[in-house]
Image 1 (cartoon, rainbow, N blue to C red):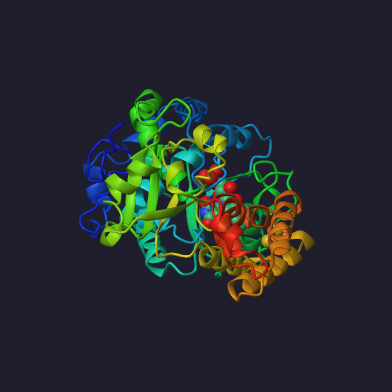
Image 2: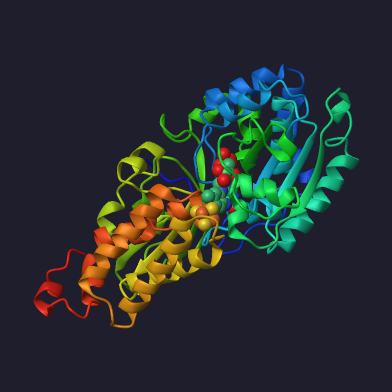
Length: 435
Ligand SMILES: Cc1cc2nc3c(=O)[nH]c(=O)nc-3n(C[C@H](O)[C@H](O)[C@H](O)COP(=O)(O)O)c2cc1C
Ligand code: SF4
């Protein structure tokens, strides 16, 4: 399958990529001239249940990390007997190496606003909130300005486009916590409580903001809706694969020639992403490893890169697509440094509520620090594995459950680097490492 590069005109986002420069913001007149808000007009003329059905038929899955079927989530909110409902856009984008939602908010704000309005109509919500990362002042300004323009044009607010449907949208600024991107912590944060995760079930679709049914979706997920409703499920399924229809925004960074944001159809291989989008490895160096899925993702060696970007194929290889961050490491990079960096990040962001995550991360950081300082031993490697598995199985929320993904995969693929750092592993054994 060929990768269709950004700037081509038949994808969902059609993002322009020109030597690291992205195009200007698409303002409301521009967006309307490109067919914007046709999908909303069409939706308002049909039954909301039909909108939900189209999203289900399209096979859209959440782009925030968990890949839950979006149409099903919508149906759960829609079917709830409680009449007060909310739509929340998760724009916290805290995953290191991920910058797609910022791009959508600053360059394609009306695609997101139309998507949220479609979602609200589908589930019967009259109020919505965009929870935007604190460190994104430009995105906050862009969305604030765009909401005002949409209200002025009758595309938001009371009686949208002359219909009986009303939808009021506001911005909530995050306060700088990675954990608040977790949907239940995000709800607590909006409600003025500590941004800590809640027990699930009940899920937000059952009991979300202020205890009301709430649809929470990622920016990219919601910004897919105008294309799906406007062009139909069959068109959408012509992109990507049967398992994973549509396209994915990839935040590509690290040691490649072209770093940036790319839209690719599902089904391309990670190797194609690195070679065709990234233009290969910088300075003619060799590829050593690739971090896929952000800090909570995995690190894999070059021979795994023929795996296709597809939920099913990746699950079989234990690769996490996550938010779509791809970080490339050349042969000068240290895997241990990479893992140390991530472990420190998670220790900093852990809320401390549950023991496996709070204590597990302390121990993991202590051991990796010892290994990096030349004081680690072979028995430490077994402990690292045990602590990480415990976090995966027993941590209360996704942060602790995923915090060890990079570590576990690096132990499987790059064990020799760990062994080389152990003071009690013999040089001969060190040479026989399994990288
Ligand atoms: C620690 C943690 C951080 C998260 N951060 C984000 C985030 O910044 N943005 C996001 O959309 N989802 C994030 N998620 C996933 C959300 O909990 C939730 O699954 C998502 O917003 C649902 O939207 P989707 O179905 O469109 O993917 C995070 C999850 C965890 C466990
Ligand atoms: S897993 Fe970590 S972040 Fe999540 S509740 Fe437990 S301590 Fe807090």
